[in-house]
Amino acid sequence: MYTIRDYIGELSTNYGLPDEKQCLKSGLMNFQPDDCQQFKEENYHELYQLILSLNDYIRVNLKTHYKLHKSYPSPRSLYPVKVFISLGDHKYLTKDDISGEYLVYRNSKLKTSEGDIAIDFEDKYPEYYNHIKKSLFLLEIGHLLYNITTLALYGGFVYKLESNGHNLLLRLEEKNSGLINSSKFDAFMESCLLRNSGPYQYRITQTGIKAVNFDELNDFIEHRISELGVLFHPEIRSGVSAVCGVNDGMGNFHYRTTSDTGTVDYKQLNQIYPYINFYGVSFYVFFYLNHTNLSDDHLTPLILALGYLTQSICLKYASRERYCRPIKSFNIDEVEKLMKVDSASYTPYYLVISGGFE
Ligand SMILES: Cc1cc2nc3c(=O)[nH]c(=O)nc-3n(C[C@H](O)[C@H](O)[C@H](O)COP(=O)(O)O)c2cc1C
Image 1 (tube, protein in one colour):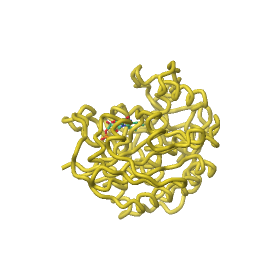
Image 2 (image 1 turned 90 degrees about the vertical axis):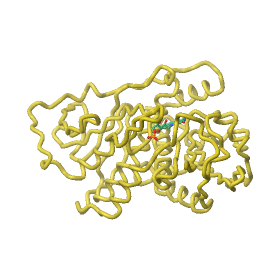
Image 3 (image 1 turned 180 degrees about the horizontal axis):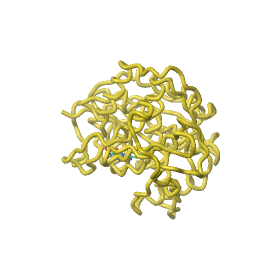
Image 4 (image 1 turned 120 degrees about the horizontal axis):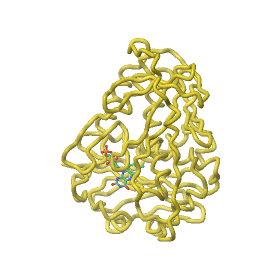
């Protein structure tokens, strides 16, 4: 799906060189409404309904530019993703995210077994995202995959990602007890409700810095990276690196990598993304792609994995007083200089920042 050409094209635009359009092909036309099927809610597994509810709109916030919100973030609240759960026999259950109706579709092109999940999309991307829409789409799906696979696990379902050239499928690998662990489940759903990227009406500036512990954040991310082999191919783990920086309360961010420790100050960070004043940011996490794993086969799962890891951070730190904002449109060149990135080996690809608002 995402190729080296897409990656080079994206870098080309970021470095002010000619734009290369990323072509994203929707397979939605292959899903046709199944007229014969009378949908009765009780016919379907409770877990399927819960998984589909992860794609519901959960909040409408009128006092911001991007008003619609789901359990995961989406660039400019476009939310193009559609989720279909296989019922076997080429039938799929989905849920209309506006009406809340469960619908049954047929797709004779896909080969799936009951419980497998197919992800598709409606192309809602405006033209100014042409050079980057595949990247945004895969990152966003990565966020949703974290939610789906975490929830599924509470119900005893273990999934493995399969991405061939055109389709993204979650294959159901293991199906254990159908009992949902209710306390974990409730805590998870609560964090999905609280997750937010903060206000968009004004530049986020000096607000309440909610202190976080560097080691706790770092260990959490390392642990998540070590677990990537469950959903993705185990090789994916060595394809991503994370660099965290934590604000000391005065706008100085201490970071540590395997080869370097250092401090960057908020004024330098403001150069990489001018819509935020980093003085008020509690922490950042840069995700880098490791060049040794860059190949047409690896890139799709790698980018999905970055969205997946970022969502785990967004949910860990979700609260009423805090935002966690994923950011794609930062200046790569500036980040490379600021963070002293070994740019022959790594490319900064995605960023998440978090802070408090009062
Ligand atoms: C892949 C991806 C890229 C994003 N890039 C940016 C960005 O560059 N700048 C930004 O301010 N927000 C960015 N966002 C955050 C969205 O704009 C935000 O999720 C959306 O407005 C919905 O708000 P919510 O997350 O509070 O529900 C991004 C989100 C995703 C998933």
